[in-house]
Figure (cartoon, rainbow, N blue to C red):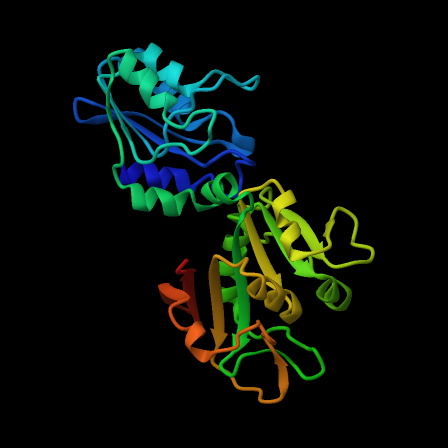
Length: 314
């Protein structure tokens, strides 16, 4: 299952509305098929793995990170039926699909066909892997990551607005990987007018992976961009993951609205004193309310800079 989850990571940010799923087929102690959800959402991981395994899938053990879909789609057959037709001995599933079109029906169909089903294997890891899809299905909005690149004293720019570059090459490359893992990137209208950001993924081998670009606010956006008036309008984006890159007013608005699920803080080992702060008033009235909101999940050095990742505790 750990290997299947690793495969699922390959599709994050590239599968549209579909979840990014991983699948491993094992027989006689050997991997005979593997797959992950392809760009745009098809083929599904199970279909890709079964195509590799062929007739050898009969009597195998199949590991899949999300319950195989049970609903018929014009884009392809239901994965539950594909698995039934392949006649494996056992299907091991990390997480039940919350999509009401499947929601247990995939597992029920497998069991009815005489296939042994084992569920909830590495479920916490699968929830983390599928956070964007689960957020869209269960909460009606994408999973939101807020990225802030600042100095040690919390400034994102000099007083005159100059900010290139606060962090170094390695930290910026890491942030481009995060862009590639996002369905869409959002910045405020002020940032668009002041910096005309490209918001592209500029890493060798990932040139074709370019998220949607969204401007928060009013006015004309660059060609190819979408405009969103309010942070709460993210419910209409119809995607799994959203990366918010700033600036300060936008970051504040999302935090004030309780719309941030994860924080990625890139800190450069510099002090600039008077400058432009990364945040303003986020609506906090009592210091005690600030505690327990965020839990650190990762910390690493990126060249001279430091990255800290925090997950929302609720």
